[in-house]
Length: 159
Image (cartoon, rainbow, N blue to C red; front, side, top):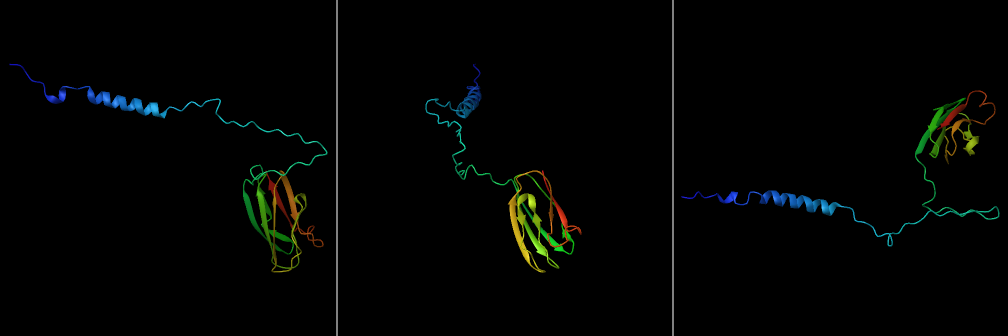
């Protein structure tokens, strides 16, 4: 008598071959396609030379520098002090200062960035905004009378 092989052992390598074939097809499909050098569109950087008698054209919206961050601060002014009296920012940040005058008559000035609020009476508010385009430590102050000398100053630190 001959022994008969069970049916499931007649092709023992078939499942293995199917798995290996599937893995091979997967990796073939995942290979990056080679680009044809003739049809590839690569734009070279454009270099413009501007002479002294030419004006530099306005940058396009893509070329305009956008602020890295927006720093918003509300500063309360009262006799001879600002609260807070320190602001920190990074070069390129857009700084928005809302100055609230709590008592007396005051303003806020920051000469290095050509920033100044209106002269405010008690209860009034003014907002100024600018881009911190240079690093350093800069003093803001009240320009009314002797207020600056009496300590109505603050510090903007730009890193």
